[in-house]
Length: 67
Image (cartoon, rainbow, N blue to C red; front, side, top):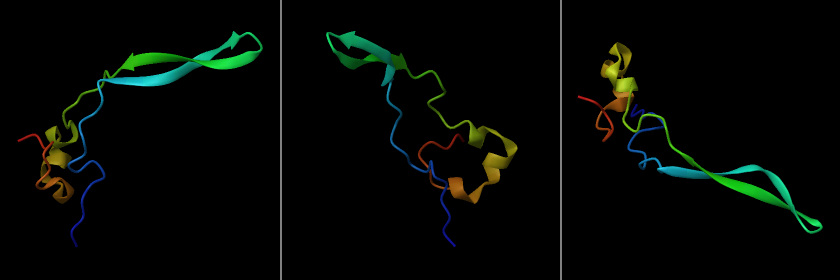
């Protein structure tokens, strides 16, 4: 069986995500307030840095795998 993890060769994460941050009134219409949130998690694969991740066959050949 050729199992691959869901993160295998995924695209790179975006640097900023635009999310809704409440509402404001624009006259009589309620409009969503949007905010830009920076990506603060690790961009590299932290799973393959653990003992379990180093031997996981689902990580074989992944571009994000840490050697």
